Image (cartoon, rainbow over all chains, first blue to last red):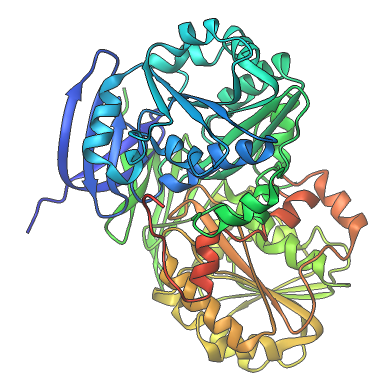
Length: 289
Length: 289
């Protein structure tokens, strides 16, 4: 009989997601954050950064399909892609399912995340050694300042707006991302939970609206993130988040776990209370109408 | 400094949802189940049945809007409605926002759930005293056998397929529900999580397909349920789950927290892996394509 050991990510010290732990496979401290890998029955192996769920073997597909397929299918022909953060390699893996892509730059501040992912998460990090992938270990806040008119698609696959990720949620940073895009370029960012992180979602949305002319949040489940319902936001200076390459979408549907063309449209439906959040009117008010 | 006390609902002893507990307001044992009410910062007051989250003040709107507005708006003119389970009153509250409704029968096996809800959840149980509501304390398995050609809409707002709710997930029961419907009638049932309860979802879907000719699952978040992403299924003998009363949908949008017309369409998009579950092909397969 093994010990009944559980890990709980406590969100704002009020609510949490708990998993029964079979084994702790790795615990370390990088220059930027605490990194742990635990093995669980519920989600397979789990990557924790600063004791927050980052990715799990069993539910990672929701996040990685959403952050990649939606913007890449909206672009007329994505050739050069930048992934900011994303050291686990899951976003890279999905980006490389788009055959027009000739180069993907991974700009990750923390090499240790990449190393741990390659060692413990082969199903996620499996394409980091693809010849089209250029790994750049650098703070994206500095890297992006130097990129002008350079990428077709930028994906901000960051941690939360605290710790090493905090500089990735500013108007300056988003402006630099915009300037790094070629004409017709698009970007998508993870933009926190519209349930558990309403204030953060609201703030990020307001910042993005200052910088981009098309700002379209979209929503899908991520069972191991706070609120378990997550948002990403598609941004551009004119391109809409519609499927531009129908044939490729059909092809991706054959192997995708979450994504299909119906889902592509459906994820852009905005719940009523989220519309009010975006309009800065209020937050969730429960109770009898 | 108050004690740091947490409650965790452990799902299949593998994963859980945790909340910090401010206070335990009620604990009792009815003839059917253990009933507890706790007060939390994250979700306000929480109703637990057999130590499982049933409803919370702050997130109940997802569930109650979804189980009621989708089927009632699809019906051409719902006048007589049956709610099975639903002793907390949230479904009744939403049903009564449909002005064509002349009578709602609440068939709840456990009067204690109603009593506790009236006392502790006034924002949810607030319309149980409406003159259109008829409360019938009875096992719905027996009640439904006696109803023929009687209801425009039946809503199965049950607990999970264990404990007192187990008889509400059988082919016989669904057949009796079908027979209780008037011509043009529709039903919707809560049908478990397509993430945390995949086998149950698959089984229920197969049973419903044996009985009804239109079987359309739909999906939305419920942060305090296992997997935090839930399903309901719309069933009929021909009526589709489309908005039949556009004016009423516009009216409901003004006060709904989650529901709007875009959401009504979007919730029917079926994730790829759920399509495979429905076709009995497989369950989620993570990893590198």
